[in-house]
Image 1 (cartoon, rainbow over the protein chains, first blue to last red):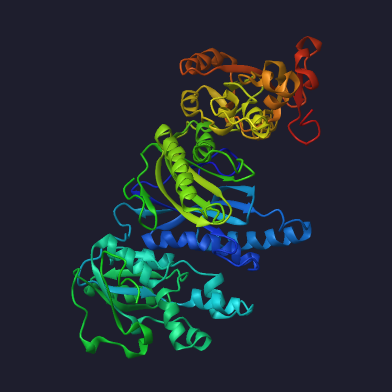
Image 2: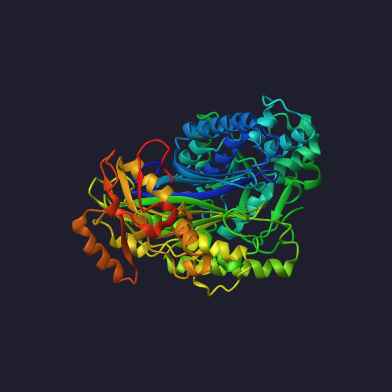
Length: 313
Length: 313
């Protein structure tokens, strides 16, 4: 950064041999986070979900911009406002430090509480992970475990406020998989982050790559504590379509799987195969592939690359 | 742009030998624009005020990102929603074309109507205009004419809805001075855009450059139709502290003034000297410098570089 906050714009000097990856995410109160969420979580989460898009590209985060809209009603009491802003800043700036994303500028306005975060990262030219590289035969895999975002939201709505609960942490304090994305450069054929839910996000990969996917729903790893909190059926539903997990959904050639898994395991992160890319129109596997434990989801899911019909069970 | 909308992030390849200038601006309904402003104006204005920050740096705009938050109540009627969005898109995308800013991504969420626009431009390395380069002896100058933003708002509040009125155009359809900023590279010693009002924005230059400014309030050019609409005193007040004009406020060495003025005149844009930079603590000129026409503002204004006292008359 050659000129920082305090002028009309920030001046940056990107490194030679790199492309810039840029993404914007808005978090709105009562839409993306509860009005009574801890301020630290609001700040952390607003940045983390934006940085997650850089992780999905295999980019290293470098800079971020924060457009914060503050609700004047909420901040009528000066002491409460100070406490909220202090917590918020701690969450946001803690994330900046954790993700090596320099806060390079922003804007503060009044209105309904919302945060638009622009993140910018760098990736060596040509090495970015995209949604479009999957080919038939590739393994479909996910990092970590799924359903924690939806599970945490369900717990929050039931009144759970213990932020050390693993599901609440997953919901309020998600961690973008930056290191995983970087490690997967050259190994994954496509990648994205899971924000809308595994089934919906698989649809994005399918459309961008023109493949079908046979998903083994029973192989989808469930977030810690999820089955205990929601019961088995709701837990699996949360993992398949809950969203807000910010794990990576990738495809990769079978011969790259062991190497990718070892690289992520070295980061303390699991990589689980959950399906296969197939040519559009390939019939789903016979009964042998069905995972009865998947309940409603009847094991292998088949997703056509075009219409909405059949997209969700 | 090597990868456009539709992936997790946009991939960009900036040109060698250039720095990137980045800025974010949020426009909130009922704060930055009236709830009943034409949708086209809302779209145009949201982009234009962000691009204005690139103009102030002497940067060429290249890309923009739009984080749009839509109010579901406002858009309950599908036909009204379609009409609004169509007008909005026309305004925003028209601006993208006019300013050569490719819409490179964004986010759409629900909440109170607001638009956060991130703009990115390029400027040859080392040539960006900053707030910090003014030195004692420099001329203070402004492009175009001032007070139109505040004058247009006043007219709008009185019920004027004729968008061909020059003041309403200035308020609702401001034009960032991109070409002017580029022409002023190497000529201006400092620059910024006038968004908070001339007096407030002079304060930014003063603080960043550690100079005082002697302002000849009577020399500040008034927007077309402003005196007729508001009366002379309110017109001058609007020009000095109204804000939302998005003209450029620059300083430059006296020997550069004629060349800068000729360059801007060639673009159909006026450049008017409105004051001088002086060493901090320099007494203001004797009575000869006073412009009686300035009314409340008593001609020459003296702005100390430090405390708030004396900042505004």
